Image (tube, rainbow, N blue to C red):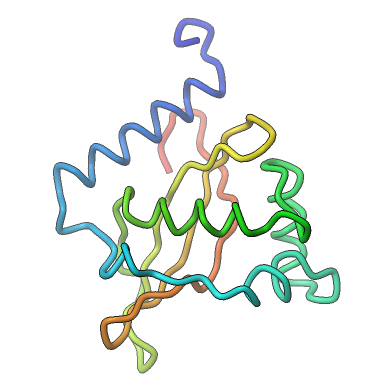
Length: 144
């Protein structure tokens, strides 16, 4: 796979590199990651709802690349929540709603194709919740 430069190998390497970074720098962990939440509405009323044009566009890409849609969004949510503990975050901004973080994660999905997913989280008063998720293209050199 490595010699052939396969996409799967590139994602696997990116995935490994990110997880190792968190192990080397635990201060980059998402606060309260093990108890983070992701509201059902974020999936059924936003990402996989054709009436929500902003969310639907992102959801269509998740369906195409990873195989998740309105009929099977629960495993997708569980994967995002499990990955919250595995990848480093960066502070995106702080405001009256708390501290907002971005986390780049690799998801493998139902179709066997990996995807680079940017997940946004908000943390306030000891509680962390998912605010957004979308696919992010990976540059050919493997950087974000």
